[in-house]
Image (cartoon, rainbow, N blue to C red; front, side, top):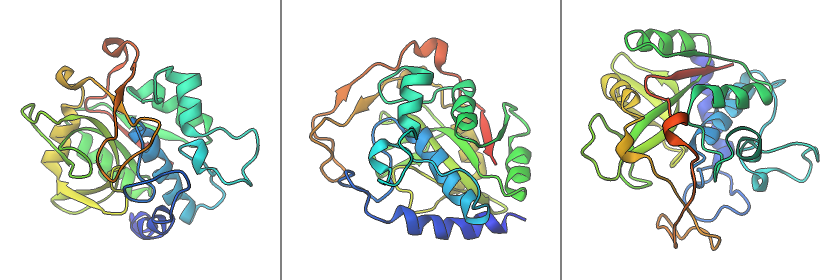
Length: 243
């Protein structure tokens, strides 16, 4: 159970390690701006397509799309930004927003908001070969990031990842800052970070400037609107399986 997802990660990284046109710096396939939720969904689609090739092909940003893509095809970011959330980068900040994006691009999902049954939800989803979208509180500047279970790290902020495997003690997931390097952390830490993701002290966002991205250092970051965060932000204890 879950063997297809384990194998799928190796095949997914073959795609993610490729140089992506227009994406300077960092790992191939890593997120840009506040698009971690959308990139996590993209990773899920890549993995699912390794054992279900008829599943829809999607792309996180327009610049990632090949010339052969249908002219009417939207990127995840374009759709989220213009049709769902209306914020600067198409940041996904609640269940409703993510479901709209998942359904629009032809995938299905299930979700849990339970504080006590999250471990069971993840185990059952992985057994059904369904990767799990994970919003969590992340500490440290990219790419040296990690889940945190307290509000003391000044670099902390809301983030999305994708769980695709587990051991008896740890969850294994993809961090969009470094998708080619599997992240493995204790289950209790990951679930605690998931429960703290809406911490109000960390509700801000910056973006790379138009000149791009210099290695892993920002090159003139700018701030942009996330809309009405108090109304939009509802991610704590949320988990979403994708199929």
